[in-house]
Length: 109
Image (tube, rainbow, N blue to C red; front, side, top):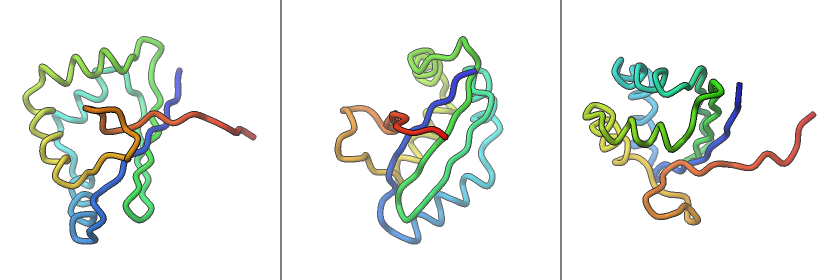
């Protein structure tokens, strides 16, 4: 099993942040299915102010490239991502075309 941590910002608007959180109370079943099919076993998203932090645990066959390819051919995932994009903003140092930025682990106890 592998673990990855990623970060992303939301637009700094309390109403938009609340709407984003409400969407994540009822994630579309097709999105959950897509996440599982990609090899993600567990996913958690945490929020402070407008910063999001995601932890994913994956099987050994998971790759971000595979997930991206799967998502690009899934109309429901593209619809969800377009909707989420109305609430999200890129971290300033994110690569063009990227949303979530992979974080480096710098400490473990």
